[in-house]
Every structure is written in structure tokens, then in C-alpha cells.
Image 1: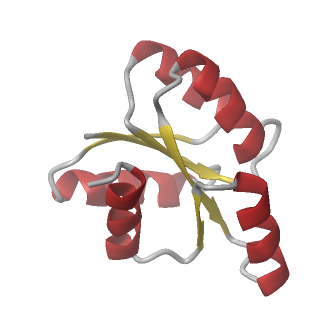
Image 2: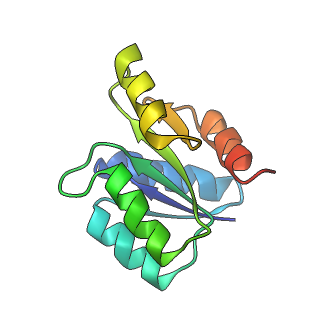
Length: 119
């Protein structure tokens, strides 16, 4: 299983990727939408974990562009904006995909990765 973490917070993105690797998953990270798109053209990913609010290319727009490159990729979304209103708006916006609020528990992320892959 190959996971791509995309978050404009470098420390968070790299830490999540490292923690996934420590649990036996292959994981990469990017801190911009442009970097994520480049990685998506170079490597096949099963799941992308995208921050909803990032400079230039937000998570929803990034998902649409990444799906054009890798139609079978699945998505999870993160946000640091944890109000009930933001949560409801996020769930509505991403539809069937999963929406998670930071700070994130690594075990919760792993469970959601398995859920989104149907395992």
C-alpha cells in the first residue's frame, strides 16, 4: 500500500509519512499541491491524504487534478479547522470520502486508510 500525505505544514506531513512507514506502509509526503501533482505523475499511490486548506491549490481542487492522473486513487481529507460547521461543510464537500480533523491520531488515520481501501 502506497500513501501520499499532502499538507502545507512540513513537520506534520513528514511525521505522518514516517509514522506510516514505521507501521509497514510505503508513504511519501508533499507540502504543496504542485509537488503532489509531480509525485502523482512519477509514482502510483493507493491513497492520498490531503489538507483541505492549502495555499494555491486546496485539497478539493487537488483531488480533482490527481484523479485525472490516477483515476483509481482514493482520498482522505484533513483540516485544522475543527468546528462542527467546518466538519459538516467538509463532509458535504468531499462526499463519500473521509474527512478528519487535526490533531490526528495515527491509529485513526490508519483505520481510515484501511476503510477507504475496503480492507
